Length: 302
Image (cartoon, rainbow, N blue to C red):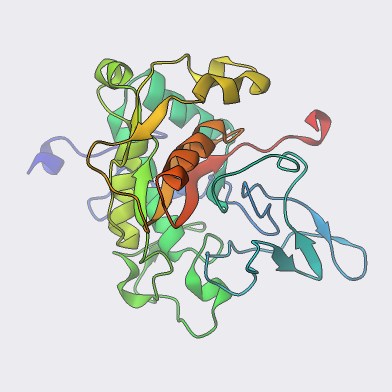
């Protein structure tokens, strides 16, 4: 009844949504505008990179590779078109406490506007909508970590309502779930900032992601210090800003468990890496990361 009295609108463009719209918060036309991450990509941060094929030509194949799929070696090296990409220039020489990050979309103008609405204008519906698109992308889209993209033994779900970029399905029932042994852990906010905003956007989006990939969510980490926003700092200051500010939640036992840390954006990776450090020091067996989007430097910025 509420949908008839107050029909839902797309959180990106404001257009009225059909009652059978698969995501219910973002219209299919806007989903088509999101720029998906394609291979080859960095084996650590997940940013798309260019490589050369055997003929020396630049190539950018499609398809994000899940953590247990063909194309990943034991060391996390990406093999594609004869190229091996262990890390991009930004990741070389850095110490990471997570195995790799799986980024869904490129941080572009549309994504920036939606994240600003969510974070600085306290629009919780945007977080829910982005979480739905994120979950659908990870669970079903061939270009976005669909198991069928890398594993010929698993068929892609045929019962989908699809946009050009993202196909919507209930969950991994029709797939072999590569994340079944993991626990999703959103990067925590300090309780003061969460009270001011009214919600933790990473947690809201992660709950929607969890519905699609059928993985449990745990608030296994807490933020113990309220520090300046990372976005206000120079990249060189971001590691120091988050050092020692996260801790394991009271009564949470991480020993022997596998986790996927989740956040809205991967820029330098300082926050999510510090979270991974806490989990690993607490005895976690494996730590991966998933982010809704990732920043990509333009050629002129490299």
